Image 1 (tube, rainbow, N blue to C red):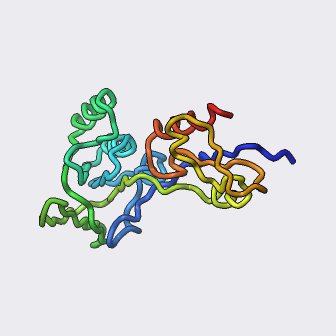
Image 2 (cartoon, one colour):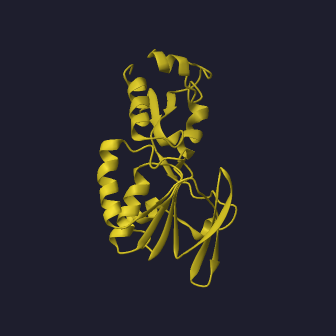
Image 3 (cartoon, helix red, strand yellow):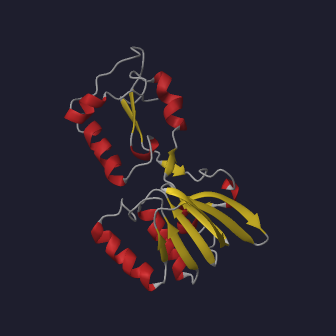
Length: 212
């Protein structure tokens, strides 16, 4: 069996929706909607705490099904991770589909009442608690690392999975050795580290593999 010199974990992440004080089991993720694993509701609250493409893609998919959609963010601005040239066609499409955009409100909890869901919201800027009655709540809160393989391999690696960040920043090769008996260097990139965007994953990979 051939042992590699370097192992790079790029396993990504899975949606993180367990962010509420109550009712986490009642919400679905934007990934569920985009993948077609969950059918859109008819009156949908989409809470976007990540500000990326997934929220807009899911919102457009839901709106095109004929549903009423409200996109809510706790931020002062909408979709900060989506650059202007991409945001324009999203907004044109969503506005044409009569989507509601709500800023500076945060989803706190969800509870079931009959066939409906009661979504409790509030503001980070003061006491502004309200309740929305909907039939589906979709959450976009980024991902949690899918990092089980990384932790399984750490003890067998020469660097213990450690990245010397100063060397990474300036472009020097990684030379950390914490385990002289280790059989390979181990690194992880992208969402396998933390919820970030595609550019961060590509940049991580470039800075590591240019020296291999």
